[in-house]
Length: 129
Picture 1 (tube, rainbow, N blue to C red):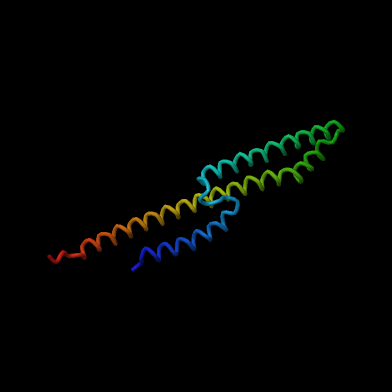
Picture 2: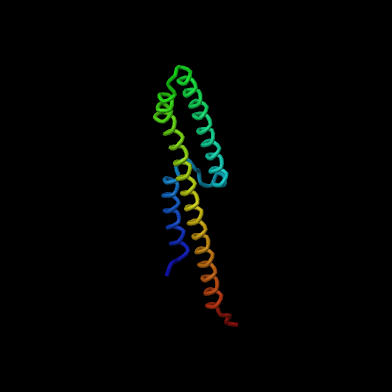
């Protein structure tokens, strides 16, 4: 039978694993949803700035009659930055959701276990007066 102490020890191990897996997200400091939202805003900035640079490069090369070179330059230099930012943000958000689901599962198991142990303690005591 799993005890509350065993459950707590297993959760501490999982939480340490999640701390490493979540990287930039810090557990217990502020809600993960807020941290993920902040990283999403940073990702938008990492989309807007390269987009402005891309427009400038394409406009510059178009002025010299070679928009194709400008597009190739943008595709090689700037598109990977934007794609990497969005992929990283999606991975971070997915990991945060998985952590929150596992945390909720731990809380439910802990509550259920404490309820079962409380009921067995109450039923096992007798008053010998």
